[in-house]
Image (cartoon, rainbow, N blue to C red):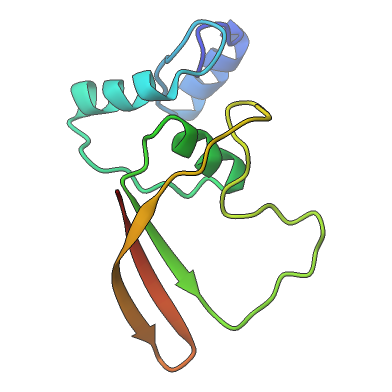
Length: 120
């Protein structure tokens, strides 16, 4: 979280036993957060499950090395559904396409595919 978070919220987290770290003064700095996780806790690999906006933010910061995507025969027909990657970085309107290459394909019980892509 940012250093500008209210002290009352930090106290709430402490009371609940929730760990946190700061990455940025007023705006979240994802590269700094990842760097701190590695340095302070020895974390080498993260599983990102944040949804389209979080995924988009990490992608824009070039913090994604691999995409593991499961495709199954189901359709989301909700116009408000967020895609796998949506413009991140707090609603930034511009982003550039990122390239990944297909590394592996696995068939899932005749109902789907597991696609694994690596960063180019």
